[in-house]
Amino acid sequence: MNQPDKGGISRRQFARRAALLSATATIAPAASVFAEPASTPSQEPPAAHPNLSPESQAEADARLQQIFTQYGTRFTDDDKKLLRQLNGATQESLDHIRAYPLANGDSPALYLKPLVEREKKKSESPAATPAKKS
Image (cartoon, rainbow, N blue to C red; front, side, top):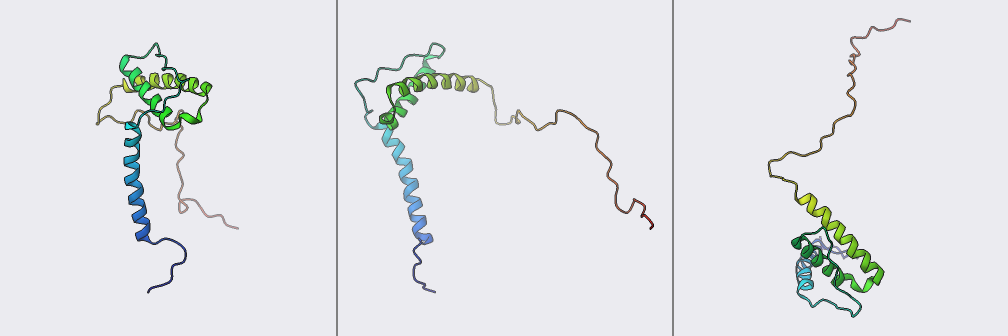
């Protein structure tokens, strides 16, 4: 029963590593939220998008700040400006989707329905067809 290890990991080791990874994944995002944001001298405050409510603007700003905290060193100034614009447009779309009334008992809005209704062909069984004589 005891066979030498073939270079892989056992189920027990895999389970242990998976549990550690999942525990770390739940702690790491919380740590990045409470960490001090990496501020750069060239970073100006995000401009308010004119079509957003104050709550939506605050959500968009928080999302943008989180992106800059995690990946700020990877972006140039032009990339950051583009991110601000895209973030505002994304927030508008999110607000539009969230405004749609939806309850737990609602059925899906889309059904697979053919555009053209066609007549169904009657299928003939093999026993019903006369056999050809040669």
